[in-house]
Amino acid sequence: MLDARLRTGIGNALAPVGRSLRRVGITANGLTIVGLACSGLTAWLIAIGELRWAVLGLIASGVIDLLDGSVARTSGEASPRGAFFDSVTDRVSDAVVFGGCAWYLASQSAHLPVLAFAAAALAMLISYERARAEGLGYSAKGGLMERAERMVVLGVGLTFNILVPVLWLMVVLMSFTAIQRFVVVWRQASDTPAPRVRRLRLVRHRRTDDEDIDLAEGDEGRGLTAWWDARRTAGDSRGPTHTRPARRSSRP
Image (tube, rainbow, N blue to C red; front, side):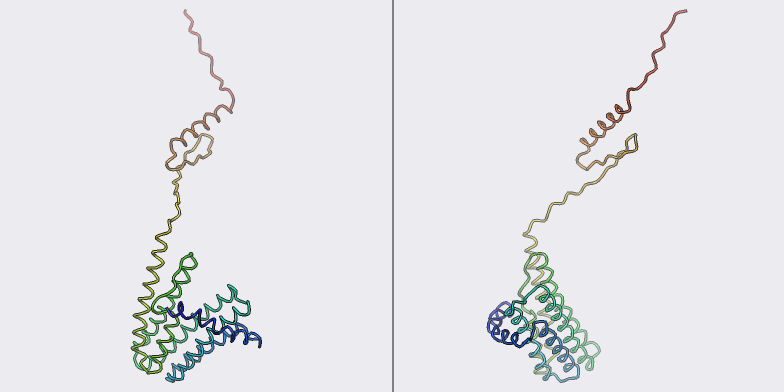
């Protein structure tokens, strides 16, 4: 939801910053790696209980995620390879941050880490639905809990030390988002006529000269005619048949 409404405006606002970073030799892929390192630092801070310091790491990784796209666009280096690299590192960053949450919650209860792992799994599912839909030519953007919303809500939970209630809220909203995207893609796919595939069952008939003729289902009549013509032609090609002359009956 925030991605669709704010990403374009924020990208335009950060365009001058992206050009400045490009002039000093900073590349989009370099920023992506720095953002991944910030996510790792954020996860470590969460794991050791420094939740408010972790908020700063979360903000830094989010800003860098916006800047790497701005640098790629303003420098003319935007490419499918860069987009793939950025998408993969985003998934790794999500997994690392939720892993830090699971480590922190393990000190409170043996069952609470499952909540963080459920949030991580749903985040991956939401991202996969969009990627798979776009690979099939459909659109699966939007939803209540995209990546931007996840980071904002998680930041609120870290700031006020209410991580467990926030994770429960995220799991519920991400489940709803996953269902939303599934329904959207399902409707798009239902409106597209499926390609007609004709399945043929082969029926094999053996000729006298050990050659096979394949007949398709629904064409048995024509196939049998062709088989009979081929058999008759094969018989004619062997040359005229020699018949024994009829024995003349003689009277005693």
